[in-house]
Image (tube, rainbow, N blue to C red; front, side, top):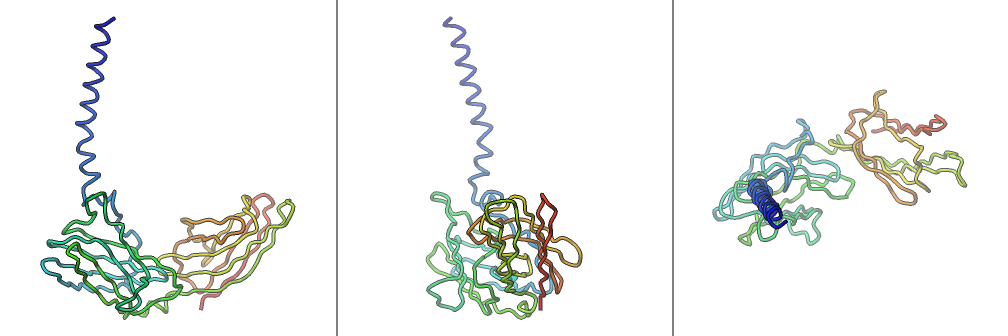
Length: 268
C-alpha cells in the first residue's frame, strides 16, 4: 500500500510543477503594465470624422512627453486618444470646466495594481471620460498627473460645432398598460439624449414589466439596443446606437397581448 501512494504523490507533485511552469507566461502577461486586454480597452466607438478634433499636440514635463492626438466631444462624454513616453508614469487624469476647478467633471485615479502602475512610459492611452451635465461643455481642461508630482494641462476648445449635432430632449409622457395585475403599469418616459456615439432613453415605471418590450424606431428601422434596463420605482436608462434622423418613435409592446403604443419624438 505504501508504494502506490508514493507514486501517486510523485505524479501529483509533477503535475503541480508542470501547471506552475505553464502558468508563468500567462501571469507575466496578466500583470504586465502594458497588458491592454486586462488593464484598459481601446476606444471602439467610431470617432465621427466631422467632429473629431485632430490636435496632434505634444507637451513636455522634464523628460516626459504627452501627446494629445484626437479628441471627440459628446453629450456627457469626452473621448481622447493620447500617448505618453519618457521617464515618468501616468497616475491620474482630470477633466475640468475651468483651469483650476476644485470639483472636476471626471477624475480617473484607478491606475495602480498593487505597487505597479498600469500605464508605463510609452503607453498608449485611449480613454472615455464620462460625466453628467446633459450639455456640451466648451472649453474644457484636461490634466495629466505624473509620478514626478508634476502635471500637464491641455485646453480642449471645440471648433467643430458639435453642439449642433447633439440634443437633450425632454419627453415627460406616460403610457398605461393593463397587464392583469392589481394595478396598471405606468411607464413614464422623461428624457432622450441624442449623442454622437449613443442614444439614451430615460424611463420610470411603478413595477418591473417582464412582458413589455421597449424599442426605438428611426427612419422606419429599429435602432439597435446595446445595454441598460429599468425597474419599478427607480429611473432606468436604455442605451441605443446613435441615430441620424430628425424624428424618432418610442414603441412599447405588450408581448402577451400584442397591444402596442408609441410616442413620436421630434429632434430639432
